[in-house]
Length: 356
Ligand SMILES: C[S@@+](CC[C@H](N)C(=O)[O-])C[C@H]1O[C@@H](n2cnc3c(N)ncnc32)[C@H](O)[C@@H]1O
Image (cartoon, rainbow, N blue to C red; front, side):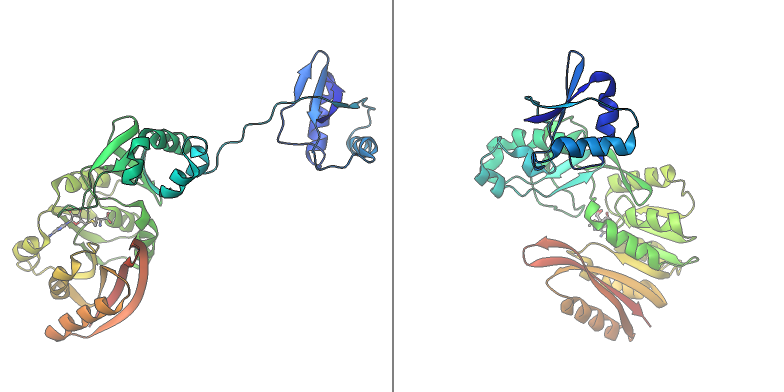
């Protein structure tokens, strides 16, 4: 390939001057040999007047006359870092295998969680190593089940890196500690958490019915002066939530309560006449079974953030309408939003309803 041969003492200067132009190629490494250096010339540059053009560029930036020659030399190519997991897998899996692999994955703190189709399981370690190299995280886990059971957790199998399930995830300036095997957490809800936190006003009393490790309460409490009750049935989630309140210095603003929200409502909220300006119901599969309770616990003008898996908003709004009617209440829909896709035909949706 064509190169600019320059005495070593001038190589850095020439490189810097020509870097600003199209003349130098970034795809090849500079070679030094004896007292000379060889700078790669961009293959797309025409040879006509090449020497004159280089001279002109050098003259613009330095008064010193720099001697150089244009010579042919073999230079090494710069190895470019792959920019996607797919690129990382090129040459390791067949084109068809790469196509079959869903290359979307979740990064939670130091861990990567991905899905591998059954007929690609024999390649799980190759895929795991590629994901480890691409993301620079510590552990890669493969999904072994859907999110299931009352605690909404899933089975995972380590396919690359260290066997560590506990990690700290950073989101919107807060730190969330969790065990990816023992609790529910989705980084795909980050935008939803920000959207919701923005609506909160100082002084609100809030209930997060299905709070998990506390991502909604932690973000809200970080930004507002509020009093948040955060219930969850999973004792591991409550343990991490308590830890997260501490590491984010939010003691006194969030009250984690372990148990079934139905029972907690009966034994505490209703008994002590505690009512809420805002209720978060992020349990999209079964939140509908708790809508009546939420409608009972919400203050006049209070807002319910109701989540569902659905292909639209109609069924969710109908449910809210039915229960409002039953309780002799009116409601106003403030917002509807697709939070994330959950299956090819369904979305995780949210409806914000103000109850009057
Ligand atoms: C989809 S996760 C949401 C967690 C959290 N809001 C988040 O965004 O990460 C639902 C949570 O509800 C909890 N849960 C399920 N049934 C419950 C109930 N009856 N009472 C309280 N919590 C419940 C589960 O343990 C789980 O942590």
